[in-house]
Image 1: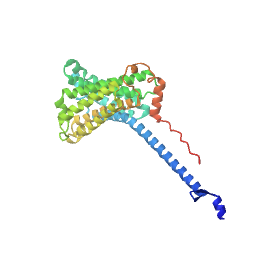
Image 2: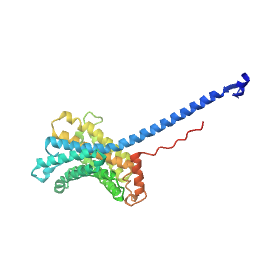
Image 3: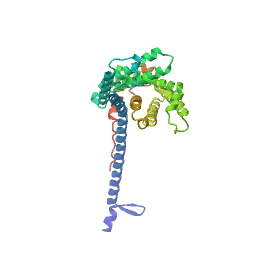
Image 4: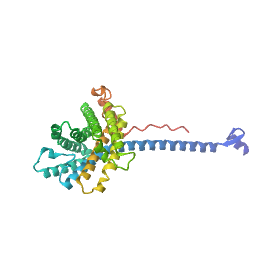
Length: 342
C-alpha cells in the first residue's frame, strides 16, 4: 500500500506530492487564467461601449439644443432677438407666425436627430434654420462692418451651421470623397468661428468679464482673458491639426462649465426673462456643435488640416474611411485568446 502510494507520487526535495494534488493545482490555474481572460474581455467591452456612448453624446446634445430653442420659441412666440436678430430687417410682417413656424421646425428637427433613421433629415432641417438665423446678422454686418460685435454675432450663429455640416457628413450611409470634403469644410468653418469667439472676448473684455460670477477666483477680468486665450488655442488646434483632439475636447468642456456657471443660474435669478431661457437653449446648441466637432476629430472622419488633407490621399480613401467608421460603430474586433493546454 505504501509502495503503491510512493510509486504514484512525485518526489521533489524529499517531499511526496500525489498526482491528484497536481490535477487540482492545474485546474485552479486554468480557472484563474479563464477569470483573467474574462476580466480583460469585460474591460475591453466596457471601454468599447463607453467610447460608443460618448461618441453619440454630441449628436444628442446638438439635437436637444434645437429642441430647447423650439420650446422657448413656442412659449414666447418670438425669435431670440439677441441671437436671431430678425428686427434687423425692419418691421417684418407676420413675425409672430414666422416665429411659431420656426419653433415647430426646430422642435421637430431636434427630436428627429435623436433617432438614427431620421437624424440626417433632422440635421438638414436644423442646419437650414441655423443658416437662416445666421443670415439675420447680415444687415448689421453690411451696415456696420467696422463693429466686430456684428461679425461675432454672425460667427456664433454660423458655428451651429458648421456643426450641422460635420454632423450631416458623419451620418452619411455611403462613404465618398464628397462626404469627406464636406466634413473637412465644416471643420475649417468651425475653427474660423472659434477664432471669432476669441476676438470677441479680447475686444469686449469688460462685457465678457461682467458675465463671469464674481465669486470665482482670481477675478472676472482674469477669466475673461483666459477664456479668450483658450478659444484662440482651440481654434488654432482645430485649423492646424496640432493637438486638435485635445483642443476640441477642452473647448467642449469649457462650454459645459460656462453654461453651468453663467447661464443655468439665470434660470433661478430671472426665471421669467425670455433671454434667460433663450440663452440657455442657444448655449446648449453651441455646446452640442462643439461636441460634434470634437467627436468627428476624434474619429478622424475629418482629417487634420494639412496639404495632404485637400487631396484624395491614403487617409481619405474610401477604404480607410469605411474602416474608421466600422471601428467607431462596432468597436475594435475582439482578440482571440489562446487557452493554455492542461
